[in-house]
Length: 362
Image (cartoon, rainbow, N blue to C red; front, side, top):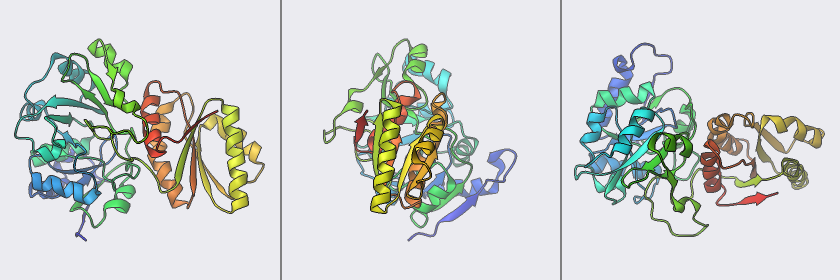
């Protein structure tokens, strides 16, 4: 077990680069340490992206397969030019439109980037976060910071400081405690090495948004790979079980009334079997399900995912509520899925991973 230093910046005000806690966290990074920190997407577990030994510590702390590429976080485009061999006009347009923000771009890498960062690929994934604390930490360390999500590999990604403490206390050198992640899903990953940008992982920056800027956009076929199919991971999240609580996750799509009846039946089964289940559903359906249950709620925990009209709320709460289902001792998690449009594509991507493809169409 490591001695993990806590840097609590939740009540700090003013310019983040002046905060003593962040200066100390940056010193840890410069010394080759691992430091978890908040971003607008999820919390990240950072280390010097140019130090192969430091990168190895990330994989060790997370229990993450070493062929799963990491995202390098930067705070300026000068940092980018030191990492990549070329930057296309399309990439420049996308950076102008969406950086800083929840978008990661894939470039051909320079030799200075260790193979441990890229999973042995000749490309590197780079992002400029919009979160003030993340940007300040990068500035203070004067280093590109490789940072996957700050959780045990395979678990739901962390969107609060408490999630990070629960997973990584004693496994990393430092944890910066900040605010809750606003987006709640990892960044959109886009390959810009070809003629047309290709989405390798969906996120808050959607295909339509990318196409509006770049003129065209495609989604990689590997995102639709069937269960058990071998996938060469070109970006984080394209291989291995991800985002999963301990409970068994099942996603339901299609007719809402039919889905709610399935939920009602599942609650009756849980009551008869004396175990607990969690249900994640839209605000509009919560009152309907409560009427169907008629007070039979001792064996179910209901999680309000916000209005069906605002799926960004669903995204921001998804990982939090998957983790909470474990905290409540639930055996199963049932989720009302959605159309794979806009950010719905990102939400369903995470749910397909979390459920290992267990989707029931009603």
